Image (tube, rainbow, N blue to C red; front, side):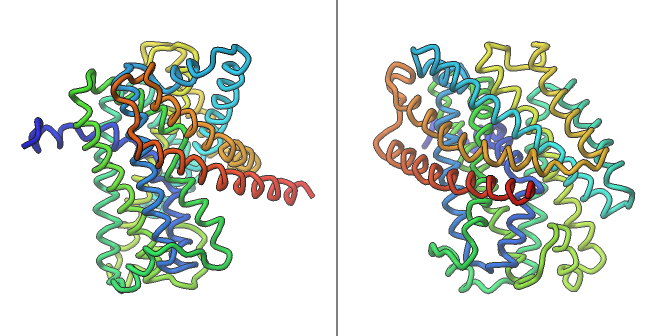
Amino acid sequence: MGKYTWKDKVKAIGPGAVITASFIGPGTITVCTKAGAGFGYALLWTVIFATISTIVLQEMAARLGIITQEGLGEAVVKTFDNPILKKLSMVLVGFSIVSGCVAYIAGDLAGTALGLTTMIGGKSNVVAPLMGLVILALVYKGSFKVLERLLTVLVGLMAVIFVTTMIVAKPDLSNIFSGFMPSMPHKSLFTVIAIIGTTIVPYNFFIHAASAKNTWKNADELELSKWDIYFSISMGGLITAAIIITSATLMRGMSIQSAADLSVQLEPLLGRFAKYFLSIGLFAAGLSSAIATPLGASYTLAGFLGWEYNNSDKRFKTTNVLIVLFGIIGSATGFNPITLILVSQALNGITLPIIVIYLVYATSRKNILGDYTNNTLQKAIGWTIAAISFVLGGTSLLSAIKSAIALLS
């Protein structure tokens, strides 16, 4: 029998749920809906790869936070003795993550508004800023523990909604299992990259290291952290797979504009409740990501610049506020942040493999983690993920550059 009871483990769910709430956003739902409609069940293997990779990497980040009682930012700073390399790392990683948060916060608010306006009506460019003000109040006044509990509830809500829709859709089980075998259908490469890229999120490593160190204080509690990670992120993988399976069953070959299109296909099964059911799921996804996005920027800068990891530090609080304000302005003006998103996509293409390398390297060093460094299997998996993310990141970078050239031409 383990040291901790099931009750202890259930109470431990929190930091991992924040990570799941962060990566299950409107973008993930839309990408997975299009993946199912365009390629059926064929890309389910991508969800398994991305989920396992996320579990391995987030466990490293959480372990780093618990053992060192510092964030990933501090570990990156300590990686290099050379002051030029140290500052270059801070600028590259910090700028790319903050710019990514700025680019995507408007999309998070738009997703939240889409869920609400589908249910109650209204204009998106009015509802989205109003939701932004709600989120602004949450990140300005709320403690991390309060936000953590809220995000955990939202993850549970999304799991109920999207798994239920999958069951109601009555998918073909034999076809589902065929999707677990890796394959790359024609023109599916960028969808594969999108699914992986929306699951393995660079700033989530910074959030997890910080939230884990705030939650657990010694190595004896690593078991609780692992349980939280395995359960919460597996739940995220299940939600992601459920969306692909549902759209593959009901929407194969259809042209998808947004995740809201799913509700139309569910009407024969759920009647007039289909619209509200999916809208609540989309609202929860947008709200959860919109809360996590500013925290990603704040935790990253806090580690690099020596801030406190909470709102008691005015610089931390100001960063949260500024990120949300960018989202409110972007969603209120109807500004299409496509150029900013392309730049962010390019930067994330560079940043993901770099941060994965930093993470695996730092958690493999005895002088940082002592007896709690990565074992041989963890190192092998970590470096493999780093290599794959390097290839995928390079491909994503090239895609962003081509898209930018096309827009400018």
